[in-house]
Image 1: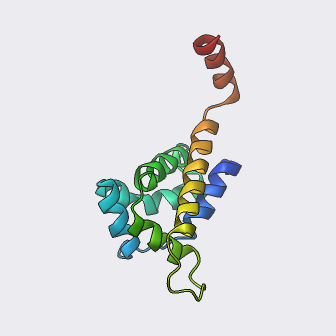
Image 2: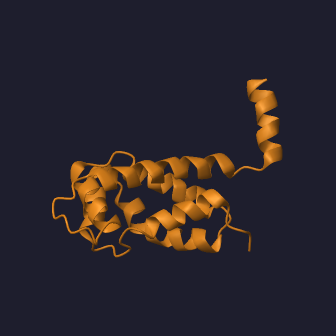
Length: 132
């Protein structure tokens, strides 16, 4: 088993802040936003697989799923994310700010995961051939 790269660990930690139950209204809202029911249905398993680093490509797959599911979140999804991430806040009108911050961080981290999945040797070679 490989070690979990820092960006992949951050992404898993971010996912643990939101409900894992597929019946949670957050997932219905996210499905409405992205229209990709297959990704919604399988993202839960990819969080677990990424945490175990099995299969090897799990962090990359999870990162792509996060970008698909949350890359264009509606106000309703952002509100539900806010409630999930900050459930102890006594303000019933929490709004979308916390959810928007979560989405920004999750998408940024997903991009970091994608940028870190290839070996350094491969990255350096591509930099020479594609950008040199």
